[in-house]
Image 1 (cartoon, helix red, strand yellow):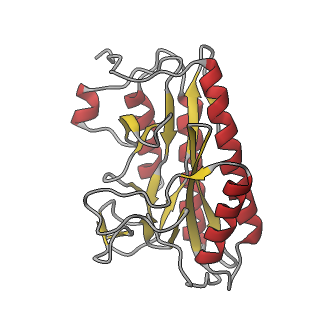
Image 2 (image 1 turned 90 degrees about the vertical axis):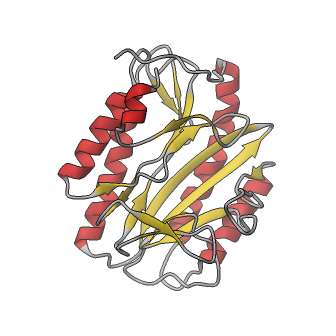
Image 3 (image 1 turned 180 degrees about the vertical axis):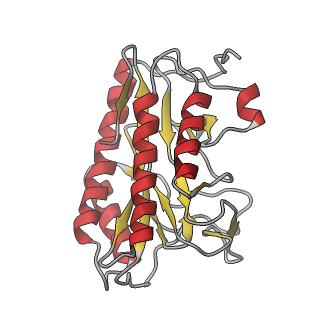
Length: 262
């Protein structure tokens, strides 16, 4: 089935370069957190560091005070810091990171009207081997997705490859949360799943130059089902096994793809 070009907002080369500048701030913050993260450091301290880098760069933190109807309050922090079984939207706090934890940090900024968004999962100290494999497979899944993007391609082919690889390694792809288009708004069409569904097959995404996507595989050690904590925002694996998350903002170009958050 041929993919249709959906009603998408394509970006010009100049706009993509402006998004790259936002992406550089995101990367600067994520690399600073990589150097900072250690047992005893709190997720709140990570949040403060990322926010300071963002503001000193003249940007705005995308997540802070972000609200959606299903949540009881606006998101109160600048990063999402999700530890171990937390999949996404972990709220930074005074919680101290422990040896053996994995911490997924999602961070986005807006600079001069344009957004950048990325995520990393960090290993803290003596992480169990199977959890290390989970993180490695998730990182590889993102690299696989980025490497397959080319003009004229279909997202369903990418999603099928990512899902097949993750499941062949004994892990599962989260279904309830997916990637997205991004530009002047953090969330734009299309939705970008990391698995193949009937809906995706019927409404496939054609990869055309100027399309900018936030690609973000979330991979669970156990089953793919998740649930939101009653306190709001934080999503955990239903079986409470660890989860990992990686994300890049990428632009489809005439010759292939460029990563805007490297």
